[in-house]
Image 1 (cartoon, rainbow, N blue to C red):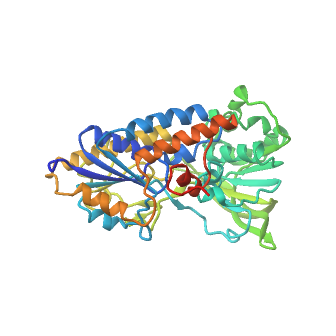
Image 2: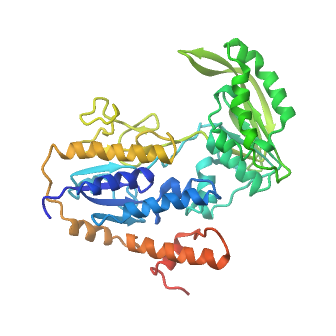
Image 3: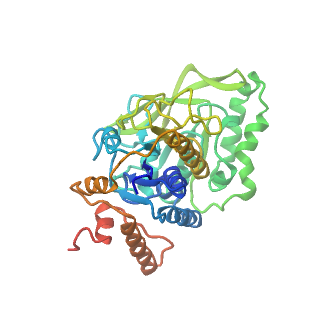
Length: 436
């Protein structure tokens, strides 16, 4: 059908899948490119291990999205300056529009001394690893007995939970730049960790930061509630471990011996109010904490090698969009290329947010398509080009085969869920590689 619009969607996380579904249900032919073999992105590889019901519910919705007959899925295909295709090559294939929902795949470091020491990691790598995303699943991590996590959001809580429950660490310290009133995790997540909170230490910490809170006129009860409200629904304590907060502290360097981190140096902060927002500023007073692991849970940034201009960890967006949705710009600075999900706003919101943002990005694409005639892109030529790559290309049918094999494995092993941890095993299960 030559009068059908053809749109490429890059990235098959929640925003890409729901965006692709929105386009496909409007009669658009969608070609969905995904870096990983499996679809799902952070919904598959970013949610805590034992949230099986939630993950299965999402997988069901993703399956329904992929079942659209006018949606082609190509997994194991990287779009990047050094990938299988560059963004310009995808544009050259004749798509009427491109929707980029590749998430925020860059790693946000602070550029501190000692970031290259063994035992210093980024949260994303740890989460991907325990959720079995290749190649992170094959990386060896050094989790010592005492760990520091820099950050105060849900990812910090997830990692603290993983360290205590799965790695059996003895002490986890959350390094928080501002005060207890600015922590950003939900009660729902903190209930899994709150029974490990050292209450004496917490009260001492609250007393220590009290003058800072009073200086900006903040009621200390605000922070106390934000942290302790989870106690009412606390998971029972099953490990011999301690969780603590170190407020008003910013990491300044990691100090090591023999290439391994042994201490984290932090600078004490004071608080100030600017336009109603609580800001932290360094006091110059530095101290060190003995640790064997430091994990940065400070958000992510987009991949600068993707092929779109970037600024402030995000792709540049058109400040005066022609096709806004809910007063937001989904247009990149390149004509016909749109951004959604974390590619539009890095580290913003969870799956529900990604779903809405992907759907809205697709609505912006639909508005744009109404201003132009369908081009004459040749779907068969595009398919031939993709399948001409000298590597296994994963289709919807392959994904279904993989799902069946993994479900059978889970049943055999008496597990709620089973995942292959390497691309080789997945390719073998789908019949791409002969079993030895």
